[in-house]
Length: 143
Image (cartoon, rainbow, N blue to C red; front, side):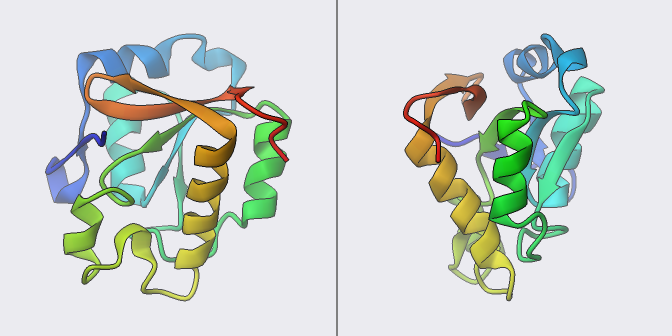
């Protein structure tokens, strides 16, 4: 499942449930969540009042952070959730010429690699129609 794209400037529409999840225990983390693209991240940050890391810059195609850096942040307990929606699961296909997740740019593979690693190592939970991955609770050895 994905969250709803279509907020301001193609940002996400944030449900009350998602907003509450981001606020819960947010003080324990540097970032309440990470989301692909600054528009999506900004939507969640503005709705929750908590920091949300944008992966891949404006549209998810910049190589920042690298997958290695992201994994280090997760291992250090700095990010609570990964929000999988819009940019990687559907709406992004329309915004990036059929290549979801900003894969069209040189850094798009970084966002795609992060997304793949999260999906392989953390359990998905749907909150208010959006898929969240709790990065503090690996489903495997999270390498």
